Picture 1 (cartoon, rainbow, N blue to C red):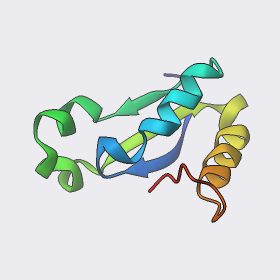
Picture 2: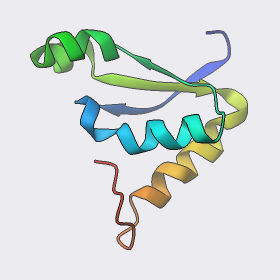
Picture 3: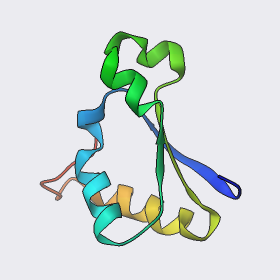
Length: 80
């Protein structure tokens, strides 16, 4: 995971499912750290620092823009 940067942190998996679908659709490489641990035991999320979205340096600005577009008031697919 060399040259990957933290873009966002989520508490629970349902908060980023739409974003995950869009990243897969755009063929953007990504990693959700702690995803499996939080799936197994959701109450550990805060102790682990949440579920962290990591993307390569080249995609950071695009992914941030994508998250901001999803969080826009006019968007029906808000990311929590």
